[in-house]
Length: 271
Image 1 (spheres, rainbow, N blue to C red):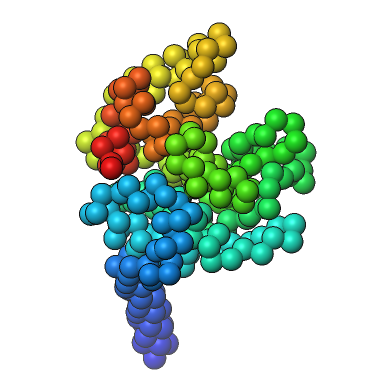
Image 2: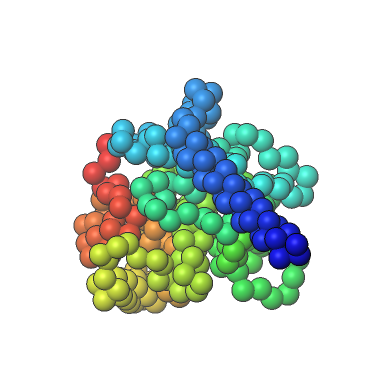
């Protein structure tokens, strides 16, 4: 009798696990297939105008991933900031732009912390990846497995100005992509058929050229902060890929080609 009871319990546990997994898969598929409401679409178009340039075939994918992102992520405002739907949509649209045509997902991320403006972390040391605003504070942080921390002032401006070459949301979520391998080192999970040798060659060549220009005081297409190390160069290169795509393709063709393969996007050809 005891053996039968154990067997029944085991079957029930497996069935419950299967049912829960199946329910999550169905919910995920439903969210990915759900368009934004007309009201939310207006907000995204207004606050993240780069999304209006997306090819028509990619717009439904973006909207579905925004829905999935908003369902998965909890937003917390800091220093009295109340995070509203427009703020969530702006951040979600920018974050999902990176993976709009990619099979990867921010699987381990559950929390986004939002400060009103540049912030000071309440600790002495950390291993997150940050965007500095001189000595007064940070604009963003990205931690492996989360959370992502953002200055709303700069997240808003980055979304509104799609050609400035500065975008804290894209920068920090590029770090999230980078960290999906288990290491944040400028080598993300490459696409099927994308060879590591070609990736390394293009990245190292572009990084060295960028570093030399920064050290010699020459202007750079990619933000000078990218000269900090390989992981920061990767994040800033992603920003430039979206916001100054044609110039990046012209000046660093091999790098552009690798990023285009990685994300399966070609923003230099968008309208």
